[in-house]
Length: 340
Ligand code: PHE
Image (cartoon, rainbow, N blue to C red; front, side, top):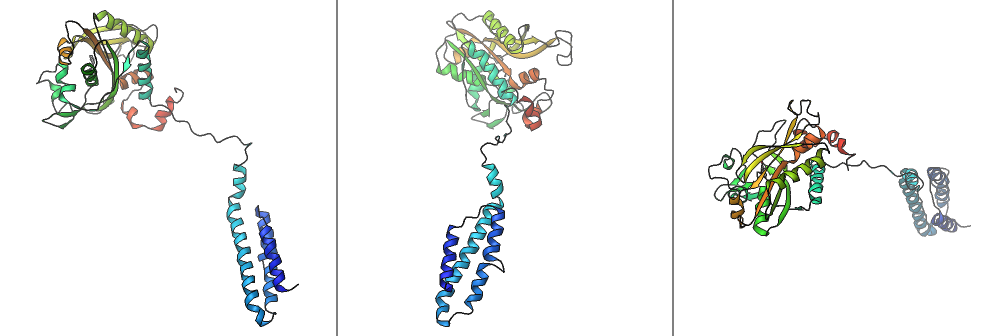
């Protein structure tokens, strides 16, 4: 067989060769590329052929060498990770377990509070975080000299016109009242901002959920009953509530609602040995607010209430420092993973 024929035969052989694992790669190297391999033999023989045949045969021999080296390199690259790849494609292996995230305690709280009020027929309303003076203060009966209108308490974006970060979600209620005719039964969850020093108990950013119910003949008894239902759903069937007189510009009368502490009245650190935990503000919507929002206060009355979501989460999960809620340390967040 001439050298050319040998080259062609081996080239053909290579076309059909498949190298699958590291043992076969080594075998391939020894057979074709090593010192004692076939290619070396061919190069030896090449030295002996007639000069006029050298050009054509040399080109073929080079092409063969390129082909063999290429095959070898390719096989090496794909099997260096190839053996592992092989196992990764084993469909009988159990799947990789991905770490499961958890819901944030604030999201959990909002979801649960929403659920309770949705069952009572409340809708959910949302509104902008950047607000104007009217929706946050004026429509809500805040007198012009009220301290909340001060830069010390509120983050202003511009003064004149007053554009600010909402300090409570009552601004959403104003927007709902301006748009909808009673009966209105809605809850407003959202993020609020107050210019306060950050401590274990307060933060400058937190969440609120406020509720609003407006219809004919809505009374304080309706408010009490709704809040009692909420407290029992939230904190357990045996929970009791008490309402203490309070003041808000937008409600009259106003009250602060407490629930019985989980210590059962025995007194603990959480309730500071009083047996009661302060949970939310509430009251009957001030007629001035109804009128400012275009609702006839002689025909309609309503109640409103508002609570801090972080505070509720702290009470429910016994979180001692509000800052933990915002730091998003995974070790903290992981503790809520069973609560999907
Ligand atoms: N908006 C009040 C606050 O931010 C809470 C509240 C809402 C009180 C509705 C009474 C009625 O503190």
